[in-house]
Length: 473
Image (cartoon, rainbow, N blue to C red; front, side, top):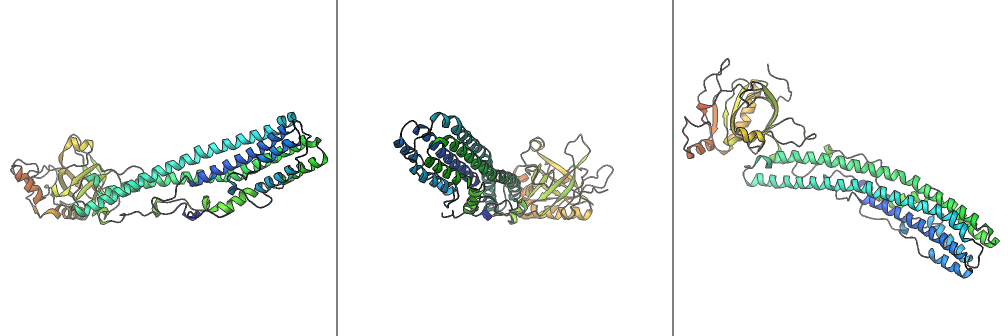
């Protein structure tokens, strides 16, 4: 029998982000195999049931018995066609039944009360097993398909926004930042891999149970044939010999004969238990290394709370992206939660203070669309790095992102903070100043004027150059 082509065991789990293989294929194959076993048992039930009826009449009625097994087995490709298997067993039954055409020594009542109940229970066991596969492994396969579709959509979204990054000059909404979208791909990809590995474990468990289950089916068939032979013991010697030959054909089938033959023929469709589980770390996807997804600088910083009633500081993970955003995250983890910014400031529209030691300020509008951004609007954020050198690195990166739309300028220092050094001078892009002039706001009234920036005690930050979370003294 020719083997199926196009899907190999090695391709069942590849390192592509979204494999092309239908996750329901293996479960569907095993469910179809159970259907084949159910039909095989149904063949035998029909046979014995017809023999039961035959004993009411004469030899002519045995022709009907032969008709019940005259057709090839349904889903016959699941059975070994060589002698010694289930297909050979049914062929043996056809030959011997032809010789039993003239035999008429059975009783309907005995067959109906002993043999048929055994086969009926076996038939129900196979149907229960089929429901287990269909509603278990195939259900988890649908979850895999759903997770893969979600990952694919987010990868396509990354492609759209990386293309928009090139065409719009990197001016876009915070949620459309390719860096953010790329982290979202990692998050959904991790969920997909978990679903795939769970589905794989389900399939392996189902596969492992098949050999023992099929051995049980064959053993029950043998038991039914033994009972059937005992029932027809009162037949003539010739009829007895023919039935004994049928029993021998069934008993000669090794319990694992059909399963091993099935593995040999359809092995390319079954999951290889020796294949390693998928790992998100080894998966690549389109635009993963696009320039717009690489931060200019990233790391942890301390920031003074925007709540005027609070004098404390909080540590966050900050990133300056090629899209000219300063994003704040709770941490750098892409796995536990979907990485959405707590704060997003578009730097070309922000006012940037020059470093004063390990402290620096950024004043701008939060565009993250979070609840806090709607309540606070524009605000001055005071940052603190681990060292003065780290603060200078952050300032240079922020200045490079903000200055890409026009030159910057420095202002005179603000009045000093009580109990601390003078507030740093600020820099502002020409685009922000131009917007203020168009709005008719004078330098003495605008909150973005460098001379009017309120001094704020900065909070510590750990830049990319200093990845530790140790707070500065």
